[in-house]
Image 1 (cartoon, one colour):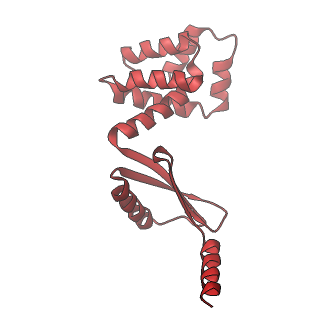
Image 2 (cartoon, rainbow, N blue to C red):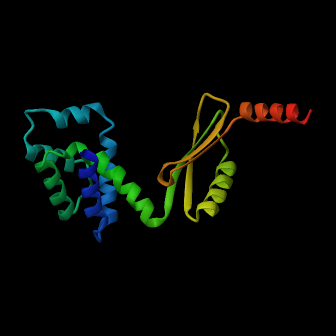
Image 3 (spheres, rainbow, N blue to C red):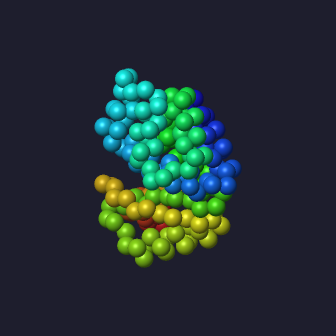
Length: 173
């Protein structure tokens, strides 16, 4: 249910002319939700909605009146905990609109900038879209590329390659 509500808010924001302003403000607010203290303050029963709204808006540098009205609506409906979900949905919708996708490369060692750029170029050509990749370290021997926005995942491991080579050699004999 929460994802449907977040999608509704995101769709309304995406159609605004001042979308970039809303998006940057929501990114700032979303980062605050990583703090347990911030979340516990928002969840405090004693905190009235007006004070909650003032507290949230105090994190931003000079928000527009339209954004203040938006946040008033969100807080008034007790949906301030959806801000990270709304932001995530907005970033996904923005990526689709701009034909740009973010993916992850999992490997045992961190890949160099040149290797990541090479993978990005090849995948961008394959999907006819702009692909950006983040390198993440995993504990297994395989290399895995995951593009969630496109529903694409590829994995390559040395163990499976060795097993297939052994199988091929045994069949050839």
